[in-house]
Image (cartoon, rainbow, N blue to C red):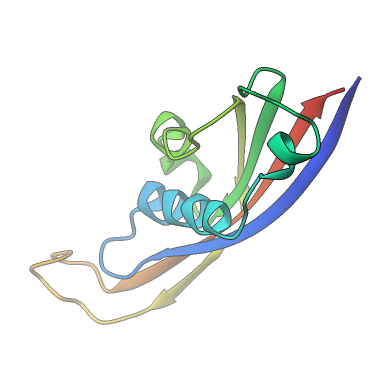
Length: 119
């Protein structure tokens, strides 16, 4: 039986390029940086990550612009799934041609990572 083990949240932004994938990947990495799955070893006695599942739910202003494989590459363990939805935030910023020529918008992504395990 699969049970949820932890849900962790994160945010990420691209300040100079409106890169949805970059913002989404940063949100996923932020969520990962808030969690330690030591209970998998300490309580459940796991020696590997078989039977561990990570579902990524990420929201950005333009879901179609997200490279899902690139975002999933940021998840270091488990069987991975992803769902990208409309959301996040897009606000006017400042154009810095060296970082994003012709672009002044900032995009922000929100991510929720759900880690489940087989018991």
